[in-house]
Length: 191
Image 1 (cartoon, rainbow, N blue to C red):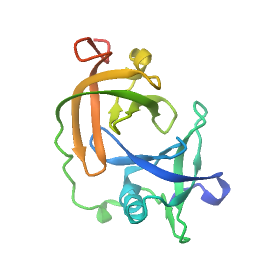
Image 2 (cartoon, helix red, strand yellow; image 1 turned 30 degrees about the vertical axis):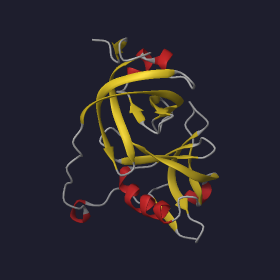
Image 3 (cartoon, rainbow, N blue to C red; image 1 turned 30 degrees about the horizontal axis):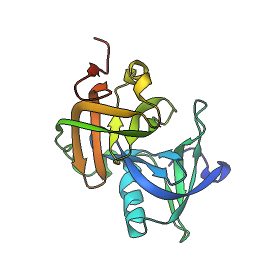
């Protein structure tokens, strides 16, 4: 059980827009229509995905904390659904309750181009990627965002090359190279 009482945390209500994926194709967050970025632990994803899939236009109330670095990012502790049900972060399951280890989906070489809708963050509010207008999630390795800062701004057209995958909830790519177009790419990390 989480040690924080969710009833003591601020409540933010919004309408689901899309799930956010990590570099392994696992759901670990969502966007609200108003642009609020919500992060939650992967062990909550199955229950959250099932609830949202029943009613993608549902209004969710999230109780969580906002990092100091960014005001439109919430690290969720609990989700309150319209029917009164609460999805609470009770921590990862104990070893005896964990399902058998699931293989990560296979990533493959990918390249894509798109317009940046907004930067994406980790639960601490640090930039870790971007959302493109085609719905693709671009992830950057830690400190990669610092090196790619000029490409991560809303409205900017970018080209990405790296490893990625497409799963039920979308496409995610780990950027290895980034640029204005596919002919002019630079590495996302200093060597």
